[in-house]
Image (cartoon, rainbow, N blue to C red; front, top):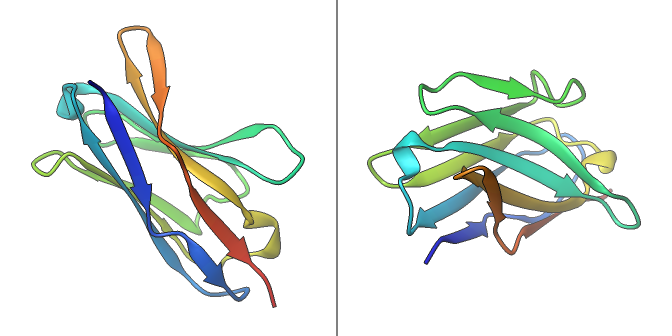
Length: 115
């Protein structure tokens, strides 16, 4: 069974940092493309970042330079380092695994940025 479990969210002030984690199991993590997406209150799903099996990554323009995606293939872990957080980064953050032509998503972790 494919499982993705996110953690690390919380309530922070603008300018602060968080590190999100996603524990993956039930599939070949090291060969899978992984992504982070987010959903702000009342809005649709927004792609944030993708990391490929070789480690190369891409980012939403608005987070480039502030967020860093990484992976630990030995531990089947995906990470998203969020720096210089803005109020508009407030959202539920989900990790996604691209598996066999489909996508599996975890239950999410809430990030709230508020002064």
